[in-house]
Image (cartoon, rainbow, N blue to C red; front, side, top):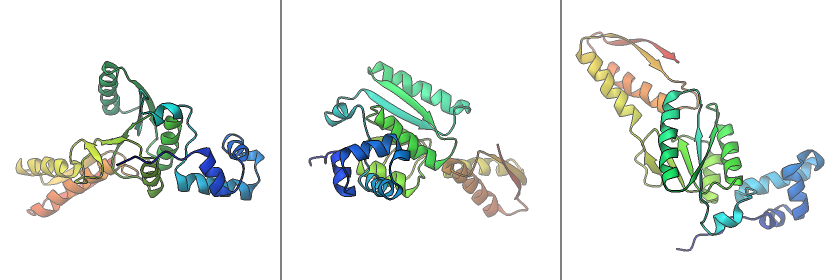
Length: 223
């Protein structure tokens, strides 16, 4: 099946009914464009999934040698070690890695995706499965090759490299219960914007609630 081409600035101009020069000005100097026109352009950009890309010719010919990785934070050592391994693998294949972080903010992730692609990233490594509809739409419209890591879903439409956080936490909780513990506290990662932490809490809670025999959660602490 022939892959559809990526949307161009000309496509945005046609859909929004303005010139390509106005599109460029709106993207680079939005304060100089009238609000109604800017809103029309922004709607067209979102609809088409357009991103201005300095490496567009490379992407079009599938010759880009750059991959982007977007992580929640650079302060967590687990992401640092994973990205180090990813970078070493890419380097061995003669490819370059660009890294960005979101601060666990889904809106920041979409902004970083756009920026990395604008700098020539031909594929992405993303953390976690949950993301807003706008981000999913952008990835689908642009046909962005990407791998979802640090988690696993039974979903054939996406490529996952990771494990089921829910089942892993359920197993860990069962082991704690088997050792005779009944009053259990959970130290979790940040839950908002973090499906991996939510899944772990959910799995542990399910195992503890199902156990009976006085078992219960005395508290959940995000750290």
